[in-house]
Image (cartoon, rainbow, N blue to C red; front, side):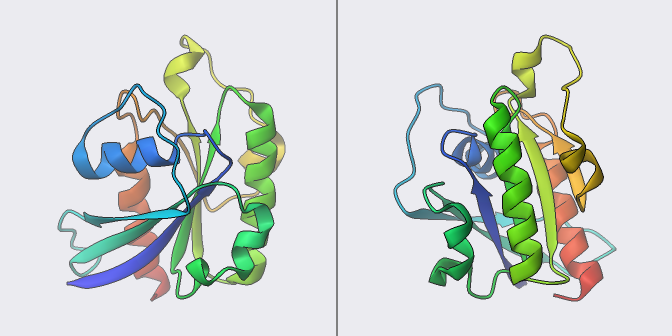
Length: 167
């Protein structure tokens, strides 16, 4: 089985760990447990005729790095990034665009997904996302780690995109 490294990036408190726990363990913790440094998870992607069997090795970063993350050893051999923002905190959406730009510059041609998390807090309204997010992206996913909405879809699409790009 092929293993590919994916970086989970975003500001503190956007729900990165909650997303990966929902993905890997199908659980959601209501208590906030901050990541210290990095946690590593493995997700076996369901079989797909579009790509060989694949495991995603997901590096869940703590959000303290900002753009400096791209110079950190954590990023070595990353094949993709899932960049997360909190739909209820506009500064995290702005940070998402900065991280996406930094990832594209540091890893040209590699896939990145933009994941706007916590959509369950919107009470049915469509989020007002800045054009930098809707226009400047590989893929955009509106997710809820709490309910599980679109979590698997985002990571399964990342796996398919990695295979399409030959990484």
